[in-house]
Image (spheres, each protein chain N blue to C red):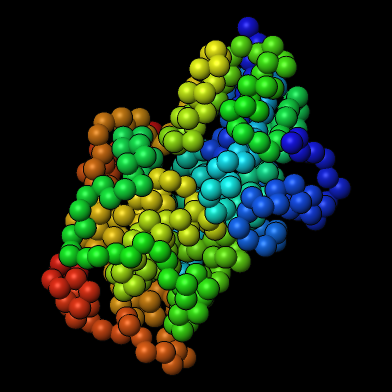
Length: 141
Length: 261
């Protein structure tokens, strides 16, 4: 079993859980061309992301590229004989679509999770009700 | 197309990235004042002790400037919270931790509702027919209202807008200009360094009243007070905000939500 870590716009720290869990694995980040072609995004946002990615991959094998996200990840994973792709989960339709494409291509996708502020996992509707439930934990975890 | 990762300077990197991503961004290729990366994030975190955060509703107040790092996972909410618990006190600590809890709340709503957060979660609480597109004069910062035009200019230039200005701007777009909050969401996503689905879409919905029990709005006095009179004393425009809360409630929504009480 060989692992590739996939970095995305919500997981851009060298202390990202997927990176920390796989200290020797190569990593990939893709500027997703189809997304950027249909979505207006300022240069400043892309530069902020790029600067953050650079620090994430300083000490490991990496590929940073522009292209179709799922295709680039699959090609790099195959070139390194990786069968598992590790990624830190954030709720995002783009992330979901890419995970589906990776699984369809036969890869096992392993999800890691960012450290949260609270342990609350119930339904949410209004902040005031949520706050009453988490207030104590937020003060003193 | 593979991107190189070694650069002699930030200017060199900016020039390179602008060329490689040509056609994939919507603005001029001008570097940010706020730098990306963990090192810059930790420097900013170290500086932040939440001093004056209790007055965070004042635009000139000391805010954390950590939101872009939180948005992109460069910092985690847990580590920022731990820093503030250790380094801040009293009301300032309480206010900041509560703001972090808002972020967590919005993320939980996103996990719960999925892509549904990009549509009205509830019906608007007043009769309205919003137009789809953001008016050109807003996009081009030429509404003639010095406050609104300055908010837009600063956003485009810096990728940042103070939270209170975000609320004012969202209320202006949605209630005064009768524009769908989704157009405002797109505009913020384009420019805000911290633009994300959860906080961005749900804050717009909160203002629009599709994720709250009543619409949020403000009047001129509120803008004057919390902007530390940055605009109003010298403003010669016909101000659409210069009314009492009850009068604005009636003219904007045709009903009384009790904001003034």
